[in-house]
Image 1 (cartoon, protein in one colour):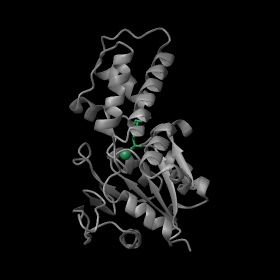
Image 2 (cartoon, rainbow, N blue to C red; image 1 turned 180 degrees about the vertical axis):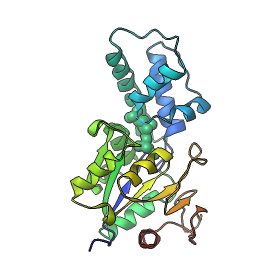
Image 3 (tube, helix red, strand yellow; image 1 turned 180 degrees about the horizontal axis):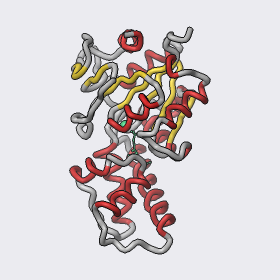
Length: 253
Ligand code: XBP
Ligand code: MG
């Protein structure tokens, strides 16, 4: 049936785990030190840099807007790619050390969805190695198999807010937007998911709490746990924690 919920499609950064401030930002800075650049992306500056998704794109944006004096090396594309590869290595190592946990309720909801045979996918801007490092070090090495499609990074040329990554994930699953629901944490994320026609549940984080989430089916502070309820910030629903029944209700509302 067209309007029966078939699949949950999750964003990664900010949604599954709070990776931006204490994960990606720290990894970028470590890569800059290693390259003897000594650029320092503060928490506040990183908030501004997050307006551009994709790590390579973010480095370019930083140089265009915040460090215009930097003399670009002749092989600029290779320079950015090299910096970004080092950043990915640092990020993966941080995940292997277990530095960033999943957000409240994420593991509970994913496991409940699996038990109910709900189909699962990932649609993210981040590099595939980062997704694997986060998922296998939090949910276990088998957990990558739980997701039917892991749509990530440069697999589509136009990153979020473009809808392409969600459209790609749904095409791979052979599903329509009317059969899926997206989980996001940011304005760029919801622009992407809604652009692909998806209903979207938002859990905010420190960097995105002021974002415009018009059209979201609900905005929550977190997914919550039965003993640690979530707060509904936008949307006319009563919820203590986001379980699969609540997702189904929100999908049909
Ligand atoms: C995530 C991103 C990514 C990460 C860094 O956005 O924008 O660029 O910050 O990852 P979303 P890479 O949560 O909307 O997918 O450095 O691997 O690009
Ligand atoms: Mg995100």
